[in-house]
Length: 183
Ligand SMILES: [Fe+2]
Ligand SMILES: [Fe+2]
Image 1 (cartoon, rainbow, N blue to C red):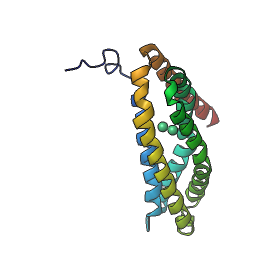
Image 2: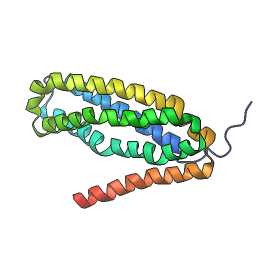
Image 3: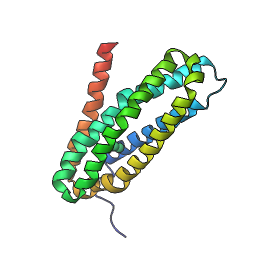
């Protein structure tokens, strides 16, 4: 039987685990956006809460994950795993391709959060957008999980992975400090 990675799994915080947790949240909020389109007869406060949570997640949290991948993951894998360059390039292209629909989703959910009564009139638009983004994300996340993330554990040394983890955490700490000041 092969020995477990001596230097990895016992680490309390692991960079790939953190990235995968982000993917779970992306899937969860993409699912919530689709659920919102099916909300008929729900109380206004529920519609407002869901729309507001979806808006906040895609506006504030998702860009941190994109920065994790483009600023912490990509440069290191480009150097150490040159054969991964096409997959990394495609990843960045897809991040750009998601921007237009994401901006529309954030705006639409902001409108619904401001006034849940507009859901009825926006339902068709929201359904189409949420479905397309959900499908695009599912394809994008699956490729990252299959082709890119495994190379982090396989090809980057522990000290690099620790530095990446620190960068991911610093991004969230900066965000928390900024939003505390904005309150
Ligand atoms: Fe990504
Ligand atoms: Fe990702």
